[in-house]
Figure 1 (cartoon, one colour):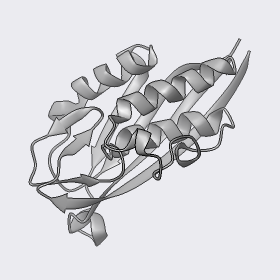
Figure 2 (tube, helix red, strand yellow):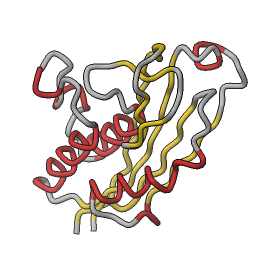
Figure 3 (cartoon, helix red, strand yellow):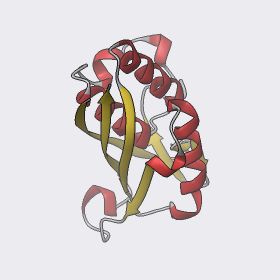
Length: 159
């Protein structure tokens, strides 16, 4: 069996009165992430981790922010497409470990729903999806609620 590890990172600007979608869950907050798709920073980091592990470049290569097909699209669709790309190369997903960094809103109550969305999109158990959150202790662009960051690592396997 061959195994690989991947790392993903994403950052999005936060804007007033904009939807805030994280892990396929729309959060109730006065600001939201802004981007070409739904700007789901968590799913974008996971996509990049998976693509990187399989040596398939990055999310921007496959889902260009200049392509109208992806404008406003749910990042769960991008995640499903990423999984298809991996499957075409014979890769299976072992686990995902992700971290969100933002000041507000609180993420903990939404983690089970995020895990469920991701599990359904990629076909693994919620037991194999870890999502954590932290603040930036009110420092920098994250602390001023100007942006949100996510990191992800994954393990993929090829029998």
